[in-house]
Image (cartoon, rainbow, N blue to C red; front, side, top):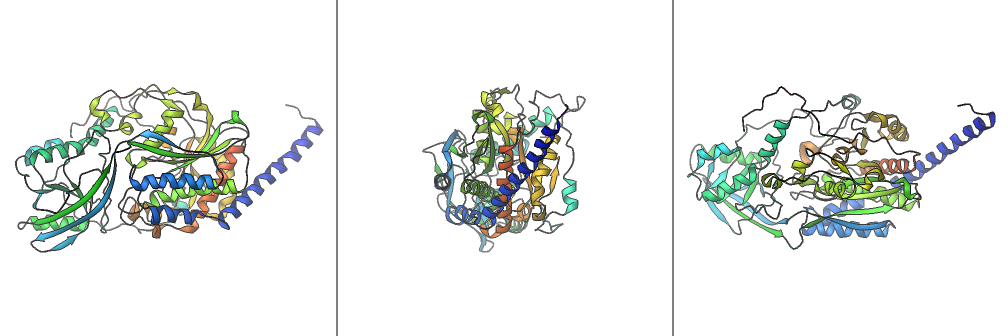
Length: 533
């Protein structure tokens, strides 16, 4: 293309103006977030005041109402709860577990989510009966009646191989920049699905045998417990009280059982909440000026487990998304694209809220028809079902940014295998290099709410964060409290989130999308399935 002198002059004049506008907005975002921010107060209210937010629990209902009121107070539009079918709520009223023989000793334990309580003190001898597959039942049939059953194989314990608290160095960030070769193994998927249904089959076996309760060992040392459980569906009503016990206490019981009788006392009180089986995603918008340009989106999951207050997982991410909304609303911005903020529900049970949003707005897959697989919930089956049928709204999402790895500062962003966005993201991160955010890496990440958008070829991205003590101590555990959040990191993350949303909402073209997936071929067509359960 040949440009005249006048055209070249006009183009040269326009380019600095665009850069100046972007720089000015970045400065305003930084000032609003670092000098006038509210992210710390938001996180504190969600944790100290509301507490752990199990999906469909009273605490989660309180969080749904409070977050909407905050959005409205900040002047956002289209603030609403978007319901989807979930199942029963569940909450803990009280728990007390102690050894009564050969001596009296309080034990650190928590009820397993969606298992019934004992409804009062139950005292019974223990039996160590490790079971992790259906074929294990035969060994213990007729031996568990009237017992409290320890179902985990005791481990030897472990010492940490690296510091519990960590910030990422340049070498660690570079290692994240890898290409992830796609892999599809139908036999492995079927095996995984079979394992996912084992907990329900174990409950049925223990109930048939007349066990009083069951106890599992916590998967981490250090006195940490989490209590994850997955019997949330209305049709899945577990019968036997379940307890997760701190690894050190569990191993003590197992050692004592080798040398003589051991009796423990379990008293757990829980409540099921069944009046409304629908969960709610919370949605709010900053309207765009061009209705044809679609929208950009930020999200984090509002739900948590209830061993503690769900601070790092994921009040931190929720507070950052809310703060990005507050910052941009306080600046009176009018972006080209609408900016949407989503607080997801049911993430801890399988990304259920974001999946419901995808199915409502973007695309569908053929429904599962196997009754046994339906019991596992939609997460277990959705990604393997083809073909994908896009909805009219499929093309409206220009970009989605997710935050769900604790309260560590943002160090960069994963392109999720979409190399085309890398130079764009480097430009958007450039103003924040002095804040420690520089890395743009190719890796894919899983386990959180951008996954199903990526799975249908939409541009969903997860930020890189300093791990701090997220996986080592706080993730799902009874120490996931406000004390482990880092206020300066939350402020930095909110500023970067707001900036990315602003850039994505005003870019001339939406970010490059992926390919609409079709049914893949097995990666290794010559493999033989492993028959081991």
